[in-house]
Length: 100
Figure 1 (cartoon, rainbow, N blue to C red):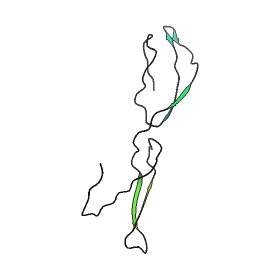
Figure 2: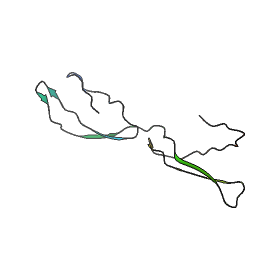
Figure 3: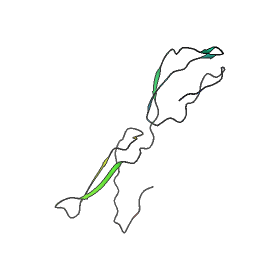
Figure 4: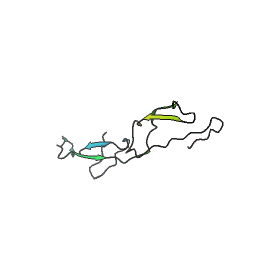
């Protein structure tokens, strides 16, 4: 990712980055002769976003229990943040309404 700004601008916004991702960045000054040396590399973490969908969701009957299903899944990829929990919703096939 590269952002080039004119010589009177002392700030820029880097766009198109991924949420909850660590980036290492540096800045150099340029003249008509070329690019100067970098002084410091700093890192920053972009803010969290809504999680992606959990992967590999599956349901199976629980042996010996007529009224239970076992639900399992894998973590979302990408996570887009720190996962704090999961919500599992279930309806009868005759009553299919789901959250948006």
